[in-house]
Structure formats: structure tokens, C-alpha cells
Length: 469
Image 1 (cartoon, rainbow, N blue to C red):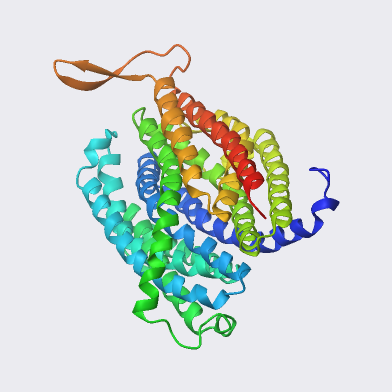
Image 2 (cartoon, rainbow, N blue to C red; image 1 turned 90 degrees about the horizontal axis):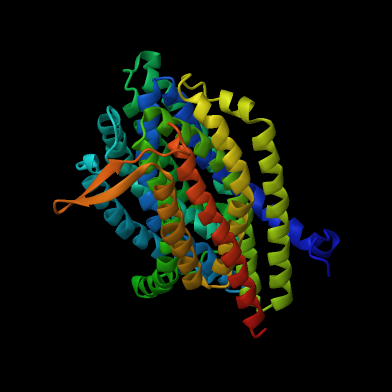
């Protein structure tokens, strides 16, 4: 069986594509909300763009911990499907809603501490004023976005991925419309600027949560997966244990990666609003292609969970090969796209003249890390599918916190000095990056992604060879 033979994996490729495309569109909808915010807020100036980016960095850095816990739900439900016990998944879903409330309290409290002590991050100028205002409003959207995540993980685990694709795209359209009204003051509304964008996001997420809850409980499609008798507290509460047991390592894995990118943004913020705005735009563009790879990885994870539940080792191996094959081809295409059309892509954001010179080299760097980023996403998804989440978290922590962040910091031009009993951050002229320290930061996390992809693939196939079915 040849790894690169499409015929060998024709069935698995079709299965992955069928599951993946709704999740890809749904993932893109989430990211395109950020793209829309970036483009629409960018018209207010470099400070506004950089502030919204920095606020979203912090929001999603902590969301790595909370979302990561809920990522366990789709895997647990998909294993139930493989065991022909799909209706048992509803108790897992109910338990995940309780977990969501606890996670909301955790994330909200930490964000409020950061909001009231934003100066800790050492950002420049108006960013210290605008970013906390945006973050304070968006922090109230944590609970609705976690509830939406629970509903989506449940339906994804069942293999029904289209509904949240439609819901996310509808929320994207609503978010753009509300941005147009609230940022610029159209239709008689006050022009709220950056805060208007935050309110648009909050409203969109609340409506998504309400529709998601209704769909799972009352839609015709979901009725076949509901138990004849609604689960009681005594049957729901025990289901929290496997969510936490599997979800905490997943949370550490997700947080390690997301925090790496968020903290790299904090580092870039030390070098001024122009470099931070360029970082925001380039990373925003790269996140669009990553969401497509993430959708393929999630589909691979669900099918791996089904195979694991069925105890079908051959099917599991073919699912893994097909997942990596799709990701490799897709990321090569992305790299070529970024290198050949970087100017046209960057022009869509209509940024200030001071920002554009930084964006083009960053898109070239993004082209290089595309393949590693996609492969590591696939490896981590497949490891989740076979419940090997502890090693996945260890790989992520080492790759991003032990390797990536220190390298990003080193390749910038700031160093920590210990003087008179205090640690201080001092500027050190760097002969490699003249007024372009952001490139050094990006090289750091590119190395981290490469390491994560290598060890992730190695660990998955090691685990696969040890399975006794």
C-alpha cells in the first residue's frame, strides 16, 4: 500500500472531506470574524488595529485552556458512536454545559485581572487604553462561546458538522453588519469605534449560543440521538470526570500553542504599533489557512475516534495516512499562494504605509511554516482520537514553551538584565533585524511548529504500532 496513492485511501479521503468541509467553513467563519474586525477596525488607524489584535490575543490565549477542555467532548462522543452507543453521548453533552460554566468563571476572573493591570504587558501608547476597553466588553462573551463550543463538539462527534457551519457563517454576516453600524455610527447609532466592534462580537456570540442550545435539544435531526428519558443529575455529573480527565491535557496542549502566538504578539508590541499591526495582519491571514488545516485535522480526529471505538486498527491507519496526505498537499498549495500573491493578499487590509513594508516578508515566513503547522495539527488531532492526550500536551509544551518562546525572545532585540536586585528589560542593538524585530519573533515560533510536527507524527505512529487490535 503506497502512502502517496490516492486509490489506496479513496474511501477514507471521501470520509474526511465529507466531515471536514462543514467544519472548515465553520472554522473559517470564526476566523473571518477576526479578519472582518481587523479590516473594519483598521480604518480607524494603526493604534486601533493593534489594540484589537492585542486584546484578541489575550482572549484566545486563555481560551486555549477553556476550549481545550471542551475539545474532549467530540472525541468522547465519537468513541460512543464507534461503540454503537450514540445516545449515551447526550449525558456527556449535558455534563459539558456544566463544565462550560465553571470554565467561564475561571477565564473571566483572569481576564478581569489582566484588564485592570494591562500595564504589566509593557505595550506602547494608546494600546494601553483601547485594548482593555475592547477586552472588558468581549470578556462577557466567554460563556456564550463556551456553550456554543459544547453544542458544536457534541454534533461534530456525532458526525453532523453542517449545522454549526451554517450557524457560524450566519454569525459572521451578523457580526460584519453590526460592526458597520456600531464602529462607524451608521443608521443613527453612535460611532463607538473599537468598543463598537466588541459589542458586535458579544451580540453575535450570544445569539449563536441560543440557537445552538435550541438545535441540540429540539431539532428533528438530533431527536434520534436523545435518550428516551432525559439524563438525571446522578447520571450527568459522573460524565464530567472523563471530560476533565481527557480535557485537561488537551487544554494544556491547546494553551501551549495559542499562548505561544499570543505572547509573541506581546513581544512584537514592545517594538511599536507599526510592527504589531503588521504582525496582526500577517498572522490573521495565516490563521485563515490554518483553520482549513484544522478542519481536516478535526475530521481525522473524529474518524480516528470511531475506528478506536470499533477497535479497527487497519481503518485507523488508513484514516491517519489519508489525513496527512490531504494536509501535505493543501499546505504546499498555501505556501505557493503566500509567496506568489503576497502583495495582492496584503493589499486587502488597506493598512497605513508604515505597516505594509513589514507585512510582505512576514507572509514569506508564513509560507515556510505552513507545512509544519498543518502536519502538527493533524498529528495532535489523531492523538486525540486515540485518547493519547498526555503525550500530545507534553510535545506542545516542549515545542512552544521550551523552544519557540525562548527563541522568539532571543531573536528580538530585548534582553532581561538583573541590576540592583531587579529584573529589567533593556534594548540591545541587533545587527540582523534593523527596525524589524518582528521577523526574529516569527522565526522563533516557526522552529517550534517544526519540532511539534516531527514529534507529533512520531508519537502517533508509535502509539498506533502498540495498539492491540
